[in-house]
Amino acid sequence: MGGYAEELGISVAKETIEKGIIWNNVESFNIIDGKEEYKAYYEAILDFAPDFIGGKYLMKTSILKNRRKSIISKILIIIIWILLSYFIDNEIIFPRIGSTLNSLIDIVKSPPKFLNIVWYSLLRSIVGFAISLFLAIIMGGSFLASLRLYII
Image (tube, rainbow, N blue to C red):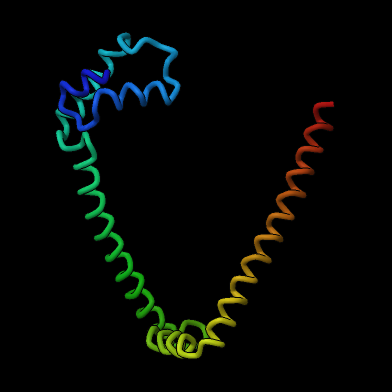
């Protein structure tokens, strides 16, 4: 298979493919037996998109698409926020984006207040995790106990 990959001009060296097969514990079958399947697979990929093999095609398109989606989704969230705060028109229920940013700047400007808020947020997260872990252990134990009773 490594030799065939070199024939097709795949960027991975023959030795790398052969070592990878051994390291991944794929020694239970003879590679020659699967040569036709691999040949059909590589040819299908090469017919579809030659740049796909070696990662060039996949990286180039996915990075650009993800960046565009990321920017568009953030802009969409901000627009929805502005519209909802305009229609709800209640600073307590749904504050405007400007007042939220002003509050954030005020919090960050005073270090003791900021550190206090971060500390209590972290503490709430740890307590929530501990409660969830405790309940999961109890429910898992009760499930195992009921399973043992059902089997017996």
